[in-house]
Amino acid sequence: MLLNKHIPLRFIFNKVKYEVLYVLIVSVVVLYLTEKYNEFLPDMPLTIPTFIGTAISILLSFKLNQSYDRWWEARKVWGSIVNDSRSLVIQLKTFAAKADKEAIKKIAYRQIAWCYCLGQTLRGKDAMENLDKYLSEPELVAVKQHNNKPLALLYLHGHEISKFKEKELIDPYSHVQLDNTLVRLCDSQGKCERIKGTVFPVTYRLFLHFIIYLFVITLAISLKDVAGYFEMPLLVVISASFFLLERSATHMQDPFEDRPTDTAVTAIARTIEINIRQLLNETDVPEPYPANDFYLL
Image (cartoon, rainbow, N blue to C red; front, side, top):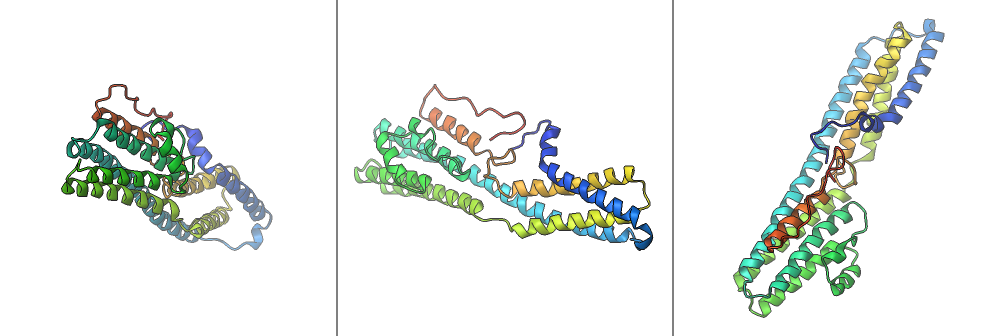
């Protein structure tokens, strides 16, 4: 997640460096052709590139809006995960007061593991990384047998809470409340998986790039009487602004790709860990996840 800090120019330039190079090549080719065959080319009125530029602006506006909706939904889902993770531990400590403290701590640590595991899974990384700090050896063995590691952890939650009910450590009403919390956590996981698994149409990006290059060509022809040393920088600046907006939308539409623009799932999981361990009255809690220059992962 980008922070409210100065974003280095290299980050911005790296987003569109190849597109800018292609625009330069196209500009040079069009400039050469217009100078060589100037008398054969009809006049290109500025209204044509203006119309194309307006169409690009509308398409970019639509894509930015849809991409932000996906990014904001991901952030809201992880906000719900924060709330439900806290609620789960509070419910365990209040509803299951008769239960062994170690049993409650076991579930609480498993919930911390679930948060990290879900974030790693969504980013395509090793879902089991560092989970040995929160899970026992039998739990690690059980989870490794599942393709969906976060779902396996939720199943262990449900199995443990059912044991509380069988031993009459919680009443039926409390069991229903805990079960509802697990259902909400499962729903949040499913929403994240839906965002991750739903691909934004690739053709939309390809068509948009094609229209931007068409805009560059028509504008270059319209400005054929303008000096090349002024025309080429103008084309680069205008097209780069379009490409930057398009690339920003492309990155926002996929909020779990381990980019600076991602939802900060690792930092959120660390916050959940701190909250849960303090609810367990522990004093040796980790520090909040540090920012990486101008963004938070």
